[in-house]
Image 1 (cartoon, rainbow, N blue to C red):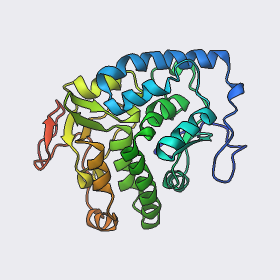
Image 2: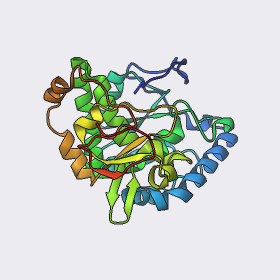
Image 3: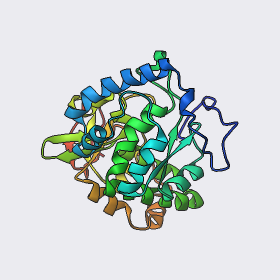
Length: 285
């Protein structure tokens, strides 16, 4: 999605097709870019066994793409066989409607460019490392893959109803920054966390953020941070809970929430199922 950005979009949009896809042009990646990919991969691969959910860890191990920037055309046959999804190359951030259309048709857009060495620890826009390392492994999980398709279909409807902001919050707090309760404690499945060296341990171990049980309407009313670690993380019990909660028509939800004030990113409500109360700050409402 386009998300919130105040700068010019990065990426070469001059050669894109009407659906915003481009050729990956894998031979154009330089040895230096492949070396940077390996550094990024090695850092995150060392962290995920402790902090990531088992579904992500299993797929990451099976894919084994740490040696170089992956070829999308090599991954797609395996992905299609597993969940009928495919990866499509895009120049960068997409308009919401285009993004939703791809998801609704089981196509996941992956940016083709890689960050610079100076951006090793932080990048403003998602690059190929964030998109591929963070998102693609869980596309091999059937339930999560179905959730993403349902989200895309819901996004097309939300776009028509003027409810993009509410639905964007759901994507942010689940697909990008979601936690999951497991028998081994809280783990993460969010791509924004899984591709971040700093936020991966922070989301589970730090005393600072709130960790709250998944609540669909609460999430759709909650603001989020785009330039810092999250003040609140929402935890699902399993991917089935996520899929079932988001399967129904959202039109009544949009009507119920319309005009209501947003909750602050660090706010804790008395109705929340609080797994950990962070050091931030807001009294229960």
